Image (cartoon, rainbow, N blue to C red; front, side):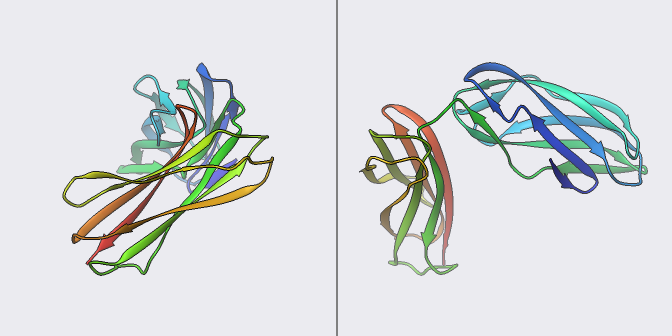
Length: 212
């Protein structure tokens, strides 16, 4: 259960099998104002892994202390993060709210991509070589995994930086893998790390670099 004022929220169940499933978003008004005309949506941060059907739910009024249970149908492939959003009115003024990321675990994966981090100062200069590190954690005995690193450059090129085989992992073991990129253009770079189990993508992380 989480809270971002003035809404308390949770998603249940938080673990589902792969396929088309139903989940329930609970929202509660923990503020002191009546919220009206609410367009409530459940949004995916990775539609390849989890997509949400429909256009959302309408809640005409949510009084202080009142809660609602709203069902949403999802198509689940792999574990991903979702977030809830509300648009409506509070005391006669337009109101927007959204939750932090809510993890929805899908099936029983053998490993997860925990993080991606670019080891650089905030605004690196041209010609700087930047090391990007991804951490993979075993959720069970696992083998045959691969981490791929890619970069989207300011000019729009999508470049593969490295493809690395992951060693056999035990449950709870963390392994770190890295790739390097030398920045040749000014502007925004987006670095991606993908975790594959065979041909199936089971994880993705993104890091942004701005070159001055």
